[in-house]
Amino acid sequence: MANANPRLAIVASRGHDDERATVAWTIANVGQKQGQDVTMFLVSTAIDVVRKGAIDHVRMNPFDPSLKELVDAFIERGGKILACPPCAKVRGYSEDDLIDGVEIVGSAALHAEIMGGAATLCF
Image (tube, rainbow, N blue to C red; front, top):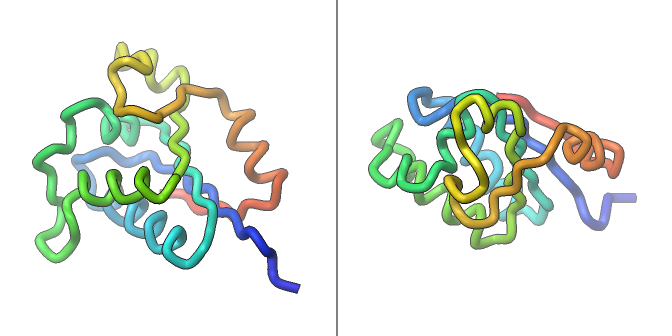
């Protein structure tokens, strides 16, 4: 029997200086379009992607949507974005520095997604 509410948790560690950031957000958006509940868990430089204004003009690959378009579409579809507390702290970020809806929470939130049946991918 297929999971009525398939879940996907993506752990992203690449920021707007690495094309793999675009790949992670593209896969998150496609998952949403296919009916998955998707959570992004951001660690390391991936947190820079959700700092206010950081990706307003970032297009990693000319054949892909801009990073801002991908993040905005993900949020509009109800995606959840979680950020690692120590990774945010070392950069001097609080939730006020991040785009609306990003939560700074510990890895227990990621583990809850996994324990709830979420498939996981890492970038």
